[in-house]
Length: 145
Image (cartoon, rainbow, N blue to C red):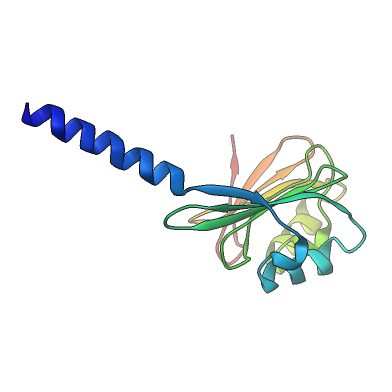
C-alpha cells in the first residue's frame, strides 16, 4: 500500500511540473535585449514568421523563425544557442571572428548553413553537409563525421 501512495504522489508531482512548462507566441520587443540586438545586427531585413517563448521551471528559451526559413534559438538571457538556415545560408556576420577567418582561409566558396554553440565550443555545418568543430575560442578541432 505504501508503494502505491508513493507512486501516485510521484505521478501527480510530475504532472504538476509538466503543467508549469509554458510556450507562448511573443513579439520581437519581448525578447531579451541581447537577442533583439543580435537579430537587428545580423538579420536586419528578414521578417519574423513567429517567435516562441518556452518557459520551464528551471529555464526560459526563445525560438525565432524567419519567413525565409532561418531559425534561431536563444537562451533566457538572449544569447544564441543554435542558428539554422534550413538549406539556406547564414550571414558571415554571425560567425565568431576566429571561425570566420578559418572558414574564409580553408573553405573558400562554401556557405555555412548551421552553427551550434556546444559545451566544448562550436559546431558548424556547411550547405554540403560537411561539419567542423571548434573550441570556445574558435580554434579548429576536427572534422565531424
